Image (cartoon, rainbow, N blue to C red; front, top):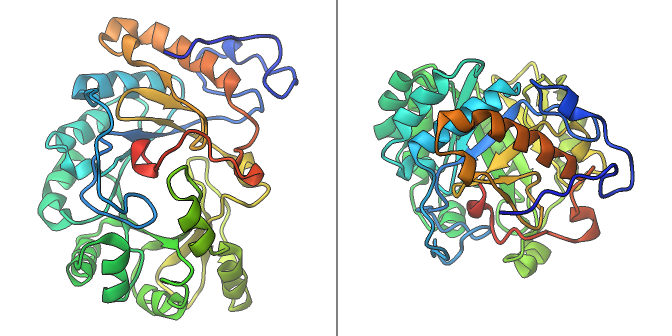
Length: 347
């Protein structure tokens, strides 16, 4: 476990705010409140996306993933400290057979108002009924291209037609959906008109995510990085208007247009002000707290996850660790931290 060394100053030399005097909150040294937890259930994935796992998933450790009981204890501790939204991620969380029970347990936790799942959608149709019965509120699905050949090239699966059909069925069933597309120069960079046409009659949020550098994709990043601000400016010139952020919003800047049923979001991690609105923390499938997607290492919580009686100590550790959170991520300095790939800590 990473040792905690709390001093009178943080890593930037500035005096931190006294978060430990606020027993029921998660607030860092910069005054940011954290009400949103991204909780990974596995780092296994059944896709081979070129920007994440181009060679497929290869296990590099022998640790067991979090049990459902450990997940419950994490969620309870975060909820007691003001977290209201839980996003269950991976890898691919649908590979966990106990996912419906985990969803139900999260929804039953006092203080949690929203539970979401991020999935690649390969098993979507067969799982929707179980997820609805468990109380799931929202689903995020990855669709990086609307062209069958490009989709297969990016993901390693020729399943676009099935996935789009499953999305339409989920919309017909009144699900709240977000669709994620990683912007990739040379692969989907000419598809903005197709995405807009697809969105016109579909009441979902389509989010374009700027490709981020990790330790495994430096060459790929140089070849395929596309600035999302270029597309965002085009849409603003076409009359798209930005929406105000809500308290539990993710990192996207969202836009609406009166002629479209759906909305568009942009996640632009290289924007200078990106970290100012950070409101989310991450726990990996091995029980490590990650203060940022691009930190050098996680901080183990697992020794405090074995019993509900340990919740006070777990809450205290979470508050202490927040003193170590930096003001911004190091991507602007061309540093990607210890993150090998996004499947390892839930993206």
